[in-house]
Image 1: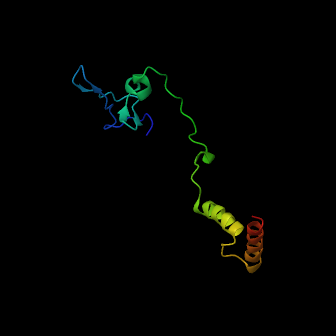
Image 2: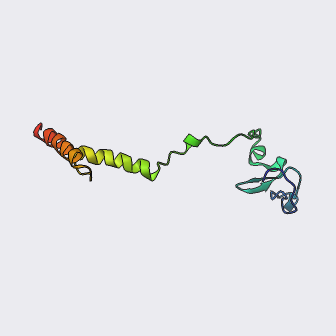
Image 3: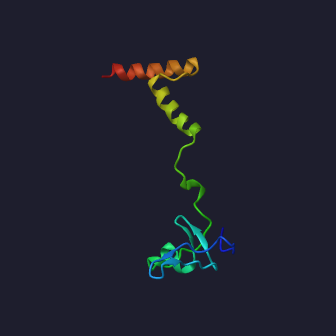
Length: 105
């Protein structure tokens, strides 16, 4: 999007005192609320400086686990309780650990 000039890229801010849209076409950027010129950006309307453009969110900012990572967490808990479909050795070891925990009550 950026500040490129397009015929349909006019500022969509409603100027109530004039009873019309701003319609400025220079420096228009796309925001969640629509296209806005530098005078009518959300920051400008609040009297704040514009946030400088940056590289975006870092890759680790997304906290949503992948299905594989989520299943690994569930598998670790299931192995500890002895309920996971696993190798025979792993299953028996988890069962023994769980039986030992129960016997210690």
